[in-house]
Image (cartoon, rainbow, N blue to C red; front, top):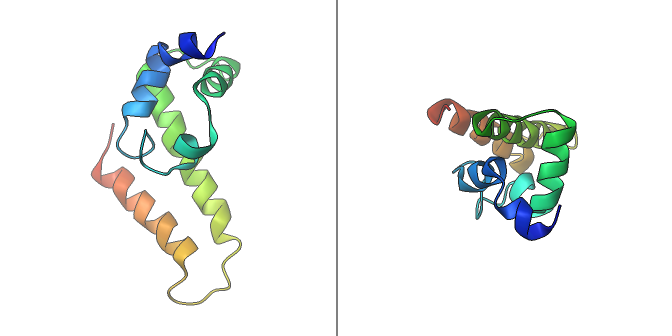
Amino acid sequence: MTSEEAKLDPRVIAIRADKLVGAGTCSSIDECMEDSELVEELDRLKIVESRTAVKWARMDHRLYLEQGTNCSSGEANCPLVKAYKDFKRAMQDNPL
């Protein structure tokens, strides 16, 4: 699949439009995955619906942030823990 074809995939369009993990959010999905890589991963996971694709992208980014908390030194104002908690709260405030 070409990058132009990947841009037209409805699942990619939905993920890129999502306000929590989409374009301009600085999420791991936004910053680290090309459209063609998203299509590959969604196909590998057999995700065919756009809504399910967005759910996956949100959960994938949440896991990315959660793994970051493992690097926390435990200080009360750790930015890694704050980012994780803020994202979890944003997911609750913005359900699909």
